[in-house]
Length: 124
Image (cartoon, rainbow, N blue to C red; front, side):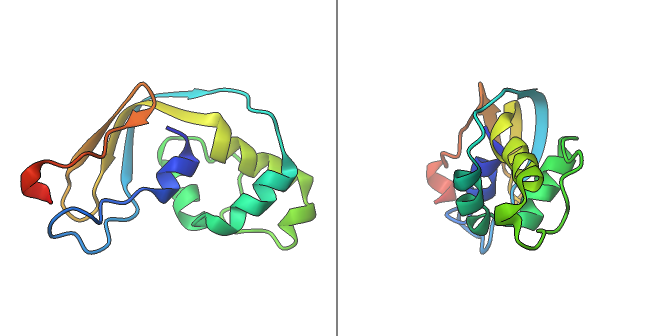
């Protein structure tokens, strides 16, 4: 599961959950794989990302590296910043672990890079 995916997931559909975001990450296996860098794509993606959540997720799995914790001004033209954002958003992959609802503690497994967010009948 890429961190861009994590940034969009919530457990809000669960009974008794009002926000369900951001999900906590307990990573067991993390890998990094190279993905072609496309600065235009990353610069269009950044406004859709909750930057604080992204930095927190990267930090929680030990991959914050030198990514700034705050968006830099004029990031669209800052190629070095875009490369760092690209790496964290698209190249870091959580292979196995769990996502945890911040309100209920419910754990959702991540197996082979795929988060299973299916709910049981009594949770809907």
